[in-house]
Image (cartoon, rainbow, N blue to C red; front, side, top):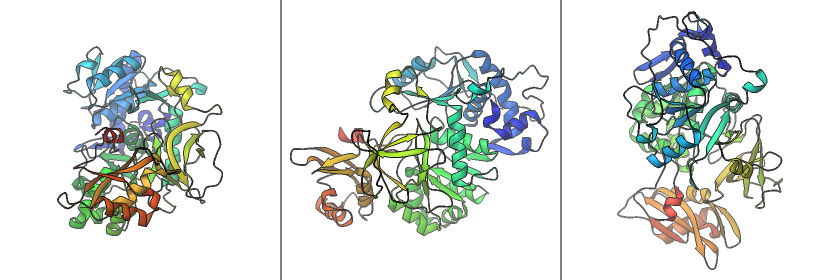
Length: 505
């Protein structure tokens, strides 16, 4: 089971060896080496292994959450990370749907009523670093029983609940195979090694922050420094202090871009980084260019989903082309399909929009308790329908233009992706943020609607000015016909714009 983490396996087997002394996790001023992580996670793994079934984790951005998930993986039981910001109704649904045997939480965490029926186990990370507690030692702690090798890769590692924009959240069952293959594919694409030190401030209840941001470094034998809460000062401190990689979402990189003109220390720290990675939503080209100009480093983007983990990425040795999510990762098949969902688009011309379908070992197994939804998500020959719309350049680079449900606008006989219009709008000096949606139009079918956060609320650019700006950069049929002005765009915890909320404003 512990083969997901070779360095941790070594520390478990040899608590006095070299691997045991390597830094593993740091959250603020609290940290664990691999040996300390092993000594902390091993007894917890034995405890959750005895409980049987799935284990809920109250996924605050803390050392305890990381230890809890590692312990569940060591025990061979699936972890269900819970978003602490979820409402009672959503948490109640997740608990009823996943039926966890118990909930793991940090001591002192106050859990909501929706979790009151679950037995609680507090995660104790206050250990004696000289103790000999490790799996296999004569301490009464026993490793979980052996698992047949043929089944190990398909065992569930995590059940991660989707955002539930079209109904109650669905639990995507992610097998150990998907975690391992995705992290190894990213290691290939990013030249990620045990010498890398990752810094991020992402939530730990989802793929980006937990699987990539915590399990990724641990699989490589490297380390992670979590900021707790994202601040540019923390980025400066950690990248100046030896961190080599930064993970973030567009909201974080936008704040970095805004701060750079007045923060030379931040610019210098970012310039030292080996890799700056953005994900979870498209990073506007304008922010790409501002960061590159100030630091000499280009942010690279990757593309994934809860159900697929990672599908594509700009490679560390490839061209960091702004506005693209790179090429398919090793082992991932990717195709674009016509509107009927069956005919692959063979000619990648950088213009034709199609839905992304993927196939490979990175995919989830099923939606928990939802065989109907699982069947609908896949084609008969095993391709997963992502619902994301994209174009593909002749050299294989993929550009996401939006979600099929909210970002594909059919106007005047054209299929238009909202993403390229948003990038064009953000290039206007009077626009701080932009989102684009479609709304019914008797003549065009749908008309393009722009939602703008102006740089100066007292002097916003006019609708005509913005329409001309887009038409000059893209094409006349892509210009917005309606413009709304807002103080801020509604976003979720991962920084994604909640367009369904805009459409109902």
